[in-house]
Image 1 (spheres, rainbow, N blue to C red):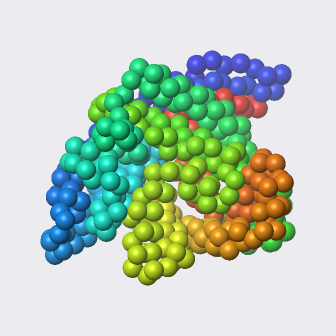
Image 2 (image 1 turned 60 degrees about the vertical axis):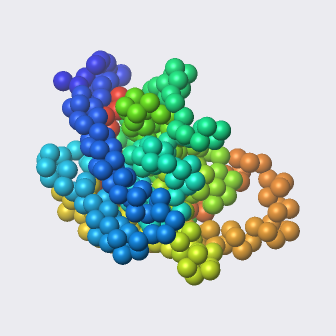
Length: 390
């Protein structure tokens, strides 16, 4: 029923071009609207108790933040999933934007690190807190930036372009069970040898799955942000830039290229408060990566709850490893010999080296998405080309 066109390749292969599932896109606007409504309901008391007061009533602020706001952010997707009996993993993932981004904004409001322009007045804060990703503010007018025809043209172009890119890459990897090259150890194994982890097959397998995530995240965040812009009339910022092609350091990859919305939430809601309380930059970085790992474990437990997923510390290990990479970067990047070498290397090679530092263990991040069917579910929201032998 989802087939647009069928054709034969040679004498032994039958292919079909499929269109995205209408059911998925029928439910998507409703779920985004629910997220925005719940965010708006929490925005007012958070603004009054945490953001606006020069002298907070610490008891009321603490009670509301940790007994109502944070539990609401964490439990809301579970409640909506049960209420509407949402089984599609992709739609479940849409609901996780609120605990991921909204939960961190709750923390930043409590610790006093809400950005200045959103904190200026309640209208700004409502636009900021209800946006599932990053609303764009006009620095001169100190208010949310209004949409324009040109903005919508650009956003539709981004969504359409990455819609095609993601569908084509999914079409390729689906035929290989999301792993182009066969390894001795299974993708969900913890028994990879060091040589296998560093092998070109493992690096390329992890790269292509990470590329799907990057393209899909770019497309989905732009699409959901477009719905927000249509409803509220405000522009949004790009959440994913070019992490796999332009990152010149580990810190740039995580801080300015990959999921900027979560990065800003972790920076203001975890890193800055921890650094302030401990007077330690290292502890701030460590806390941000640990909380990121815990958050991603929680996300997977929710979206894959029907598949029998178990908590195995994979994300904690992955983000812990990347925290070590970031510590190493901060320790050595100021050395004159390191700066001299880096200055002579072409930028594409630097990007490749940055990626190769994390790719050996990237399967810790992507394995659940493969094994528990995330890509298999989401590909039906993409235009794909599927083939089978006759």
